[in-house]
Length: 396
Ligand SMILES: *[C@@H]1O[C@H](CO)[C@@H](O)[C@H](O)[C@H]1NC(C)=O
Ligand SMILES: *[C@@H]1O[C@H](CO)[C@@H](O)[C@H](O)[C@H]1NC(C)=O
Figure 1 (cartoon, rainbow, N blue to C red):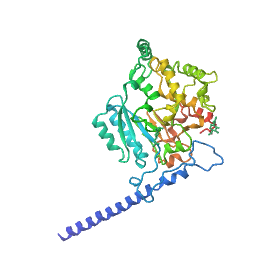
Figure 2 (cartoon, rainbow, N blue to C red):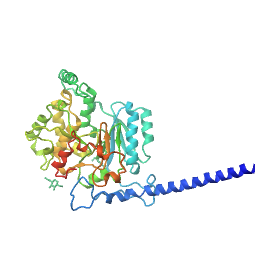
Figure 3 (cartoon, rainbow, N blue to C red):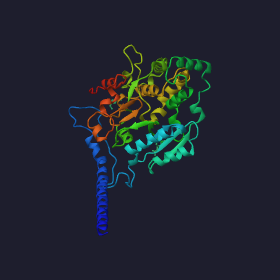
Figure 4 (cartoon, helix red, strand yellow):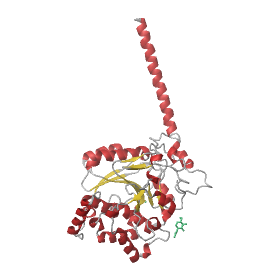
């Protein structure tokens, strides 16, 4: 009896001791994790003279943190930009949307509390709203909107017989989403309407997120504020070639718009990134499933006229013009090329491609889980090397 009692006391002592030990290290960990956020702004840029590489962050304004506060619970909000996440998705995308939001929350937004706008062509179910609301931090406003009919469905000026013939041909040629009308609705909506949605209109900046994407690194600064503070308008992580079959007449339509409206063409534009020596389109574009950009640019006169012109020609339905080439070409024509920003430090994956940070100390600073050797950037299908060359950046 006596021995058993002593054994029990000893075991209890060990358990209690372990408990204190764990509590102590946990607290130590919590303190440690609150530190790198403030630090990262200075470590992100390697010392200067040899590299004028604009892809490496310089002078990033990091969000002020209350000293000693746990990252999850600091009481005062940082100074947020006029910005929101925008997620176009369906009720059936519930699980994959939760995964995307969970990752952006964990890697970035739980420290900031930027709002979310979810958009759908039909109302979101109560379950969808509850499940998403549960994943997002309590500081963030979360709104769910229905897309107005006229922003989504095929407009009346489209000749349906011609559109149908186009779909059938593409389906026969095995073009991805070649036979889909709803995919076309989505591309047109993303090209010309998302920034006009009533729930979105109150914001200037957006970060586009899709179901089933991945964020592989901590984002230790505020990309919206970076854009605003550095005069950027359009931000990307992946650039690649478009399927030519989907945009047969897009470039000639763009050219005819440009000859009608030379007044909108920016002097230091980025057309040289996309145009071949023979004047044809080299198919390079920014992959628009990730975008951080200024909606006031899409809302402005030049892009509005541009979109309306493209929409009148009907290529969103007769062919299958994607919002990625449409946004990219618009940005390339109407912006100074220095307003287009490559976010190296944002590790991002949309099946089947991953951008994994490679520059400076971005990969380390971001605690990235991706393999930089498998980054898509210098894959044969990527346009990144072209972009670097066009921008006069050192090759990696
Ligand atoms: C945010 O941006 C939108 C679009 O530019 C603008 O209408 C709105 O007034 C801005 N809100 C604030 C608080 O500045
Ligand atoms: C384009 O941007 C660069 C860098 O900000 C600037 O030096 C140049 O003057 C701009 N070009 C025009 C035409 O404004």
